[in-house]
Length: 533
Image (cartoon, rainbow, N blue to C red; front, side, top):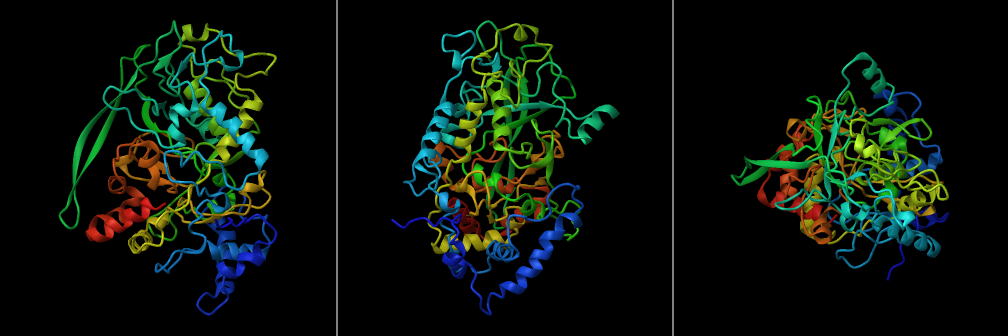
């Protein structure tokens, strides 16, 4: 088997510079790279990004910066795959057999010792927490209100969740509860990034349908679908299902009338550590909040405050880019989904509010001998490492003519205006496995207005009620293989990739209309390309 190339090694330039960056008349990279370098260094400032965020990469020499810009430049040759396109997760890409465990493999370039750490993290990710008090003291602290007992129960096979069906619970999809600011003081808190939004005064920031013995859950998510008919350019008809959300049997009285309901499907876990090591300057260089180039695309970052350090930084995780790091995302999930406290979110009673008095009288699972939180730092270290090192599967069928044709359609329809194909991660990362990797996530990790059709009306930090972070597309073609279903978008309303595209509005409207107006063969080819990711 071919040995994966390790992009982190010092001999990277000697091994692949000639393959990736040919110096010939067809690719005048040094002239183009100089221009692109100037654009990259100045783009955030031109776009009006806040001061204090990095506007250039300090981890690269000018020579390496030019090479990175050249290798990440979108291709114009669709007659064959690009160099290293097969390995869409860099040297850590998994080449294991494609099956239900395709999203659960460790990064291929971690060490033997790190594989042990990965397995320990996996065990904690799968662990079922129990209510307090319990004889298993290292596992108690569940709830008292919660959505699930284990991380794996929401992130099924480390993959995508599904909306609740007939007779099934909301295991891998839940409702966020929040309202916008209602007075000057609250608006100032949002402007200073002290809060992302304001929770419901009774039910908190998330609807928990489950509870420990002796306590009742908060209610159940209800979804009512209506159908919308879409006629494509060639006369083909596609039926979209439009959801309407409500809370059934609320356990503690009515919700605040200002509270908005935002459904959130659990996303796949692959490639998170690589996303975390994309240079902030490379993401910010893609931002154009005022649409100064007038292309209709105005991506912008979600700026958030780190819980422990208090620093304002770039959000890149979550459906609205509301979390800056994997560790913070994990801590938020522990608190909101399972009711487990961490050093980052020290809520020993989870999302219980002052109005839910019975919840706050129940015992928690803090053990002084283990630390000041139910999930102390060693637990967070292991879960974070596991989440950082779930490998991206290798591409499939990328050299087939129909897939190459679909890639051409994807580029020419304008999909890459938001779904940025490639990045090269930073040097000097905490884990060498993520250092200086050429990766293909197909996302710019910025917020985009996706129109009223997908709007949830809920502000989250800088994200408005109609803005969503561009989700990465790597692995999307294995959704059915891993999870046994195909539900897409933030709430799983789309049952096919075609439906997901047709729901695009706002900044995605032009690309959506090009797809809808294309010939059936071109639409089919584009879907084949997505299925190869």
